[in-house]
Image (cartoon, rainbow, N blue to C red):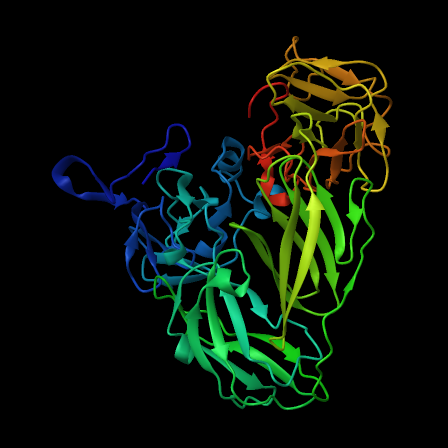
Length: 523
């Protein structure tokens, strides 16, 4: 466990100071122990905190108004925060970082229990402010104290409910519903007593619960519980998938009670699943099922079904699957060979358990330019849109001339076309910037002098890239999509969204994350 204090403060002050003759010169109010444990009492390190945790700080004497001086806060214990904790009250920026907790006092010990499960992998900090006093008015010896915390990412260290089937708010649910399902992001136990299917009046319906494979259901990972239903459901009735305090996570901590509500149909409905074609992008092709995006490595099917659907797209050993409560699907198969005519199969299952199969013919393109969007700065610290940029990386082994290529922030528009000849060397990055972009501007990370700049006008996209993020599309001169970036906002101005996969064609949310800007260099 790491302990951080302001300069000049003691790290572990003794509970008492003694003077000549050994008599007590007066009590020193100090921290004597700090620990974290699971809610069932198992001790943990501060680097491996469960999602439902209890933090306990013991003092040498009872504390006064500990709720106003002992906090669990989001983020690192940076110098500005520690300075702020040296004098009451907290600045608004620091107060916003406080994690809501239930605080209890047991003699000279203070315990904090977060009111909501903590997020896996996040950094937190347990702090004690300098202004804390004992009930006798003695100030805290040692000043501000800060304990860095890291939440465990193990699925055995906590879980929350992430999805249900039927989903919350669903209507016209078939009376012959074969099963209901709940997806958690970690392990749960005691499902027989902790999960029930019941009416709005509280009457339980017959359903057999068991653990099931999330992938077989159509989810992408997780821990899934299925409630098999043998009897027909009541008509036009609001039902709930209910969780109670008997449900436990992997550490033995109890869930809070919660309900997912849905409404059954007024009569037996057995309408077949149908598809409508969504608005296709410039580089997509309309098919009977939806829009197909193909390149030299993959095919992406975007489809819109008439009802909630579980879907699998497969081709030989390649498969992708998805559960869509709204019927909106995006399924991807890769890696595929270039220049090939292929036929994939789409299998769909609706709420009533009806299965349908469809052929999906398509052809991959010949080899395309190995160019990708790797970094986007949409919210610079400097002026906007002048200091925004989009970083491109040539993954190939030869220089690439991008004349005729385009960058757009709309799926249905060509966007900014690179009119002039511009060569990006092999394994090299270049920045797409505005005419007024200043690579040496003092507010943001400086651009190394040797990084090429591709200047394309007064702004990137339609008047600049919004701070909340917007999708970007990189296309070649034949309107083939080479790469994309998602609409992903950064939490901190001056940060970037950064590609963290080597799949250069993938523009999904899963392929990017927030990170420090590193223009022209690997992040």
